[in-house]
Length: 278
Figure 1 (cartoon, helix red, strand yellow):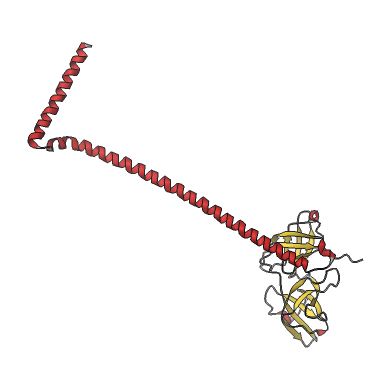
Figure 2 (cartoon, rainbow, N blue to C red):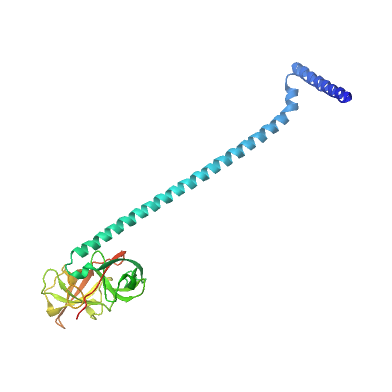
């Protein structure tokens, strides 16, 4: 133990002597010698410290930026969803309000039993001839029921399943509806895409074909609605006369009708039952 203590004292004395000599030289020759001895060590330490600091700072800043970007993306997603929800809610309210107006226009008791449904599918055409609605036998839908948009007649139920139904739009050739005009009850006729005539050769897409009984006095702009003949109740708006075409060879008067229902914007719909004729 005594020997170890003696050695320690000797080492301490040697280190002290070396430092004394170094500082003596430094006083005589300036600090160039000490700088030469210690600068490489200090320089290496400084570079290592700077690299560590740069790495830590860069990682911290990068992580902070990533976290902020994720936070902003989440906020934007929430805002987008909120906007979509608001728009959907506003559209639903408007469509339901339009459907209610359609009901208020009608006087028959048949409208007291009605069902609000959604369009859930359609065929691929822009001016489609059939579509599916979100109610079937469980909802009380029956074949032959009328389907209304907020603007007018949209179609007729062709087939009914348990939870959905297939509807033929007015643009389907199987549909044929008796009409009269709002301006005068004396003008009546038939609207049907099944009317075959060269008069409709250049007819714009999405329009309805029709003809007038007894060559009646019908005008462009006349409102066409269901006449009440047969099983369909009267007073449901179909569309507006877009063009009147006189066929002198057959002494007939054809009409092109622009439907009030916009088939590119259908969403909410109304199903009403047709009459039962005894």
